[in-house]
Length: 255
Image (cartoon, rainbow, N blue to C red):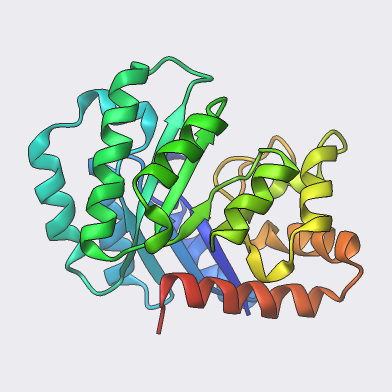
């Protein structure tokens, strides 16, 4: 069975057919899903999905785009949400300097605070990093987040940084981008990093793989990601599914 390590089924793009899509996943070989929050509203929504569906687990946290509206009391709300046994990570959290939705200093502040929270709760982190690779890495290492581990979602950094992250026990999230012709560096990363350090993800409804690029994404498209990794690694698709499932189970401690 496939372990989808990063999805957003609470997104408005699934409003009209969320239940239908979720019911279709098991028939497509998807056995587990981490529904990842982006703000406080979606943190609550992710927990509700985890309560409703036995195969869904939740991550709670605030994305760098949305930390501009984060308040101190939100940390207490995240602690309360994380008390639910199917909350398995803090995320997605991080730095995004590609867009200017939240000031950089505010992003750094709340990334720091949410890493500290994850360490207090002994939960892994799901990290978003865009155009901020070095600062993201520096904060993670400065705060000792390797003690709880985590995944660098939608990994887009260098081979060198990938090796440092994975040597420190982190996983790399690999999604639809691996199927794109221009993803040369990512393909080199996947070739060189042990598969025991990779997770598969969609980031749905975003980042659909080829041949569905540009359309709404969902976890059924993970078969294209699996096939791309298998081709690069020169192993079977079944091995990719099995190993990445075990990797996600180990990181998120799902039962």
